[in-house]
Length: 138
Image (cartoon, rainbow, N blue to C red; front, side, top):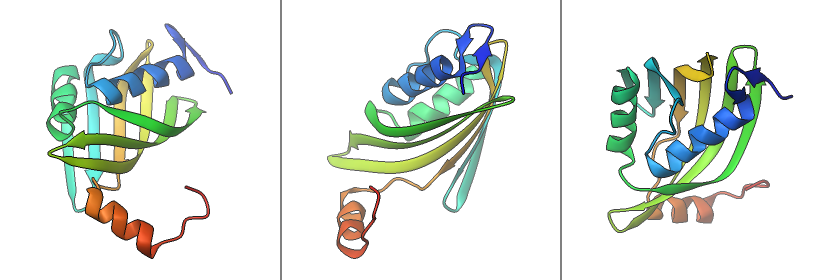
């Protein structure tokens, strides 16, 4: 399903959001000035109010660049849900996490963002998982 916003499609907005995740730099107009983010990870929760605070929270937790090798996008009546996998290198380690984002959109920008993250897996945890668990779908 393709949903059109004032500035393009939900797919285009989700693509811009992935650019932000991969680079740490939000494309112009991605977030509303007063955007709100509610970020939940294992055993912890953070919130940010305003575009600058949201971007700072992301840069603090993922200071380097990374990749989003897999993702799934579903349009909703108010925005989109994006499920993805992220990979990045930091502190001499290759890292991995899976996340689910629910974004509300108004006037072509993300106004509210809920994030659910598995937590960051370092190389040792990824290797342990590969030894102990068989996933029929990677």
